[in-house]
Amino acid sequence: MADDLTSILVIVLIVMAIALAFSIGANDETLSALVGAGVLKFKLALFIGGVAIGAGMIFFSGGFVAKTVGSDILGEGITYTTIMLLTVLISSILWLVVGSFAGIPLSSTHSLVGSVVGVLIVYAIFQGGVNPDTALNWTKLGNVVLSWFLSPLFGLIITFLLFKLIAKLYLSRLKGLNQIELSEKHFKWLLLVGVIFAEIWVGANSGEALGILYGLLDNGSLNLTQYFTYSIICGIFACVGIYFAARYVIRNLASHMVDSRPSEGLIIQMSSAIILMVATILGLPISHSHVIVFCIIGMSMAQKKEVDYKALRKMGIYWFLTFPVAALLAGIIYLGFFSFGFS
Image (cartoon, rainbow, N blue to C red):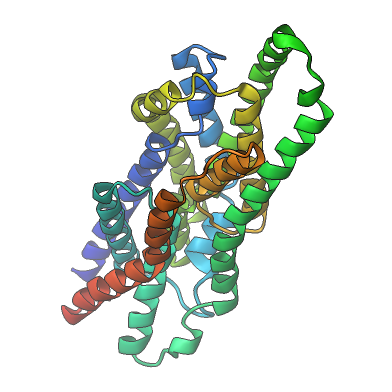
């Protein structure tokens, strides 16, 4: 009976991981700058962006962020049970739903990692024979949390410096409206390259879906062939998510970007892509939305435009609360499972 339940839960987790991959694509806004600039026809832009995010997810499924979420932040000798993974997903989804109703773009990465911490602390306290001090890899977890603070900051700094550099060496030397318009036409095609580059690293750094699959691999529920097979399926569904669902978000955001310059979009996308690339190579799951927001702030500061600090403070409070609230929520849910004999 227990084996049958475990098998069912593994299937449920695989389906939920694939659904998560779809939602990652469905909620991605990276193509907005490209569509707003009118570089490609809308459907072609969706297709290229979908292929890029799916490729990033597939080609970097062999470790990196997936391994961090699915194994490395756990203490030595600790592996996820299927109930743990189920709790992590339930907790993450619940908190993200709250954020959606509040109108705040919360980080699914922060929510997922916070949920992992909450589950493992409760597991260590009530399981017996497990030291809470060693249930988590605190060094790895500390590096992950530190990256959440540093990545937006570096996004702001890189965007600010990159704009100042390009403005001084190139943009400021353009004379007349004709030269400026011709330059921006060239930047449109550079923006295409920048967005594709960014989409690849968005997929590569999305540890939510593949982290769950890696957890199943680590505890023996999946073999290596199955893991890579489902990783490919996740990549495909991320692509499908962009093409069929993200179009509404992208079209809406793009309508507000028709007056923005392609050169500005290129700088923001390249800055965020560089941050995501470095974080992925280091195996650090970060929030793409947080980085993008601070890249936009960096651009505004470089251009001496007004920054909406009131809205930023509101987002900051929710961002700060995500990790502890997700941890607390996951701990309570897992304690409920544990009370009924499921662990």
